[in-house]
Length: 101
Image 1 (tube, rainbow, N blue to C red):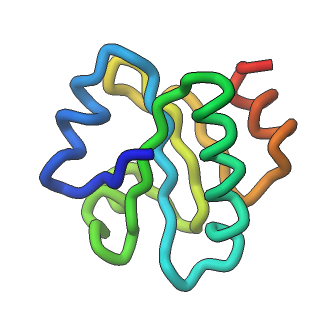
Image 2 (cartoon, rainbow, N blue to C red; image 1 turned 180 degrees about the vertical axis):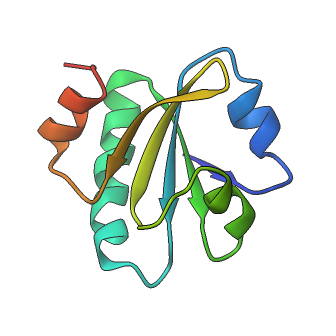
């Protein structure tokens, strides 16, 4: 997984030719700690590029997309968000919602 910041966000997400799933998370968020390992498994098994964006350190990107809760996952294709998933979900649900099943 890639650690996203305001410095690399445009290059890693907006200008990427491949789909990128961005997980908006925070250190203090219990559900974020639960979903992190699940996303690592999905990345390894399905080859989906995943980036983690710490909302406490990058609030301007969180605000840009109207993210109000963590964890929130946004799937980007061609630099545009095409799918939003809010909250920690079991692996099979995430795989299904992301269209990877």
